[in-house]
Image 1 (cartoon, rainbow over the protein chains, first blue to last red):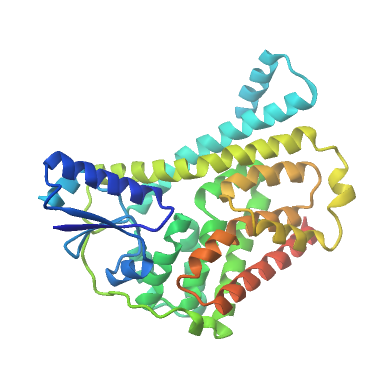
Image 2 (cartoon, each protein chain N blue to C red; image 1 turned 90 degrees about the vertical axis):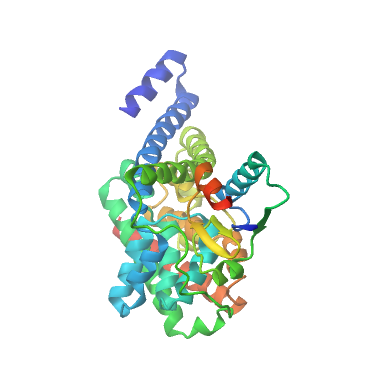
Length: 79
Length: 311
């Protein structure tokens, strides 16, 4: 699975979501299966139809946007 | 009440004179702004879970001229967003057909006039100045947006594709109160954390001016026809939140800086900044950015002159 976190440079909550996702991935022991990528290019946000960050995209599908999902919510997306 | 706490605290230290005046200002303003920030930001964040950018966009999509511009400005007041979201918002709005001018209005008004700032302004300056500031900010944003549109600057927007029909993600309508509270808490925490350093610096600067700038200094140096353009220009390289500049303006006005000049400075700091222009460069060609800065700066100066005449 490929997980993308969309967030511009200088967006603190976006960085936080990335760290949350990474720690959930580690907790689940799925480092080998799940690739976590941070996307900072706004034109890529646009191609996902996202205009409020942070956004969480799993395998090309927007799961959350404009909010910091809780660890449970992240777990649900990843499993 | 905050005044009382500040005075009591200063009394305990036994300080008098300039240092006491500066300290009192610092304690008073820090308390006042922090309380307002926490309360208002949380309340607004909660209400905002009902009004995500997607909804604002849909409100504006089909609107005609003047109604749309006024609405864009008003929506800008109630929706604070991180300057790091400016570009995604711009793309999202323009990408699904919100008129270009209204998008500019929204993005201009939002950093200049926001709900928490309105409360702090009211607490610092009283209602007439607050009203003047809010109306002035709206007018600058509307004139700026409509002006750029009429002058044909829309063609300098960089081409991009926006996936308009993407319906994925969390929907605004099906959230529980608990979810909204949690989101509001996260949001408020982020906003306050981001703004607070600017508040501390701003209040510190304000306190220093309040305590140590000699009376008469401003009357002797910062007057005349060039004061307003100078204040506007000075605001461009300064990058801070509107909440950080209010205490500075508060003590400058207390030292006799004309109201219009002070407001021009506040607006310029909030609406025009170099980092913002750098971000916008991703979606706007240079001509548009220059015109944008020019028209907003010009609007702010006119407003400053008018306010100097009125107040």
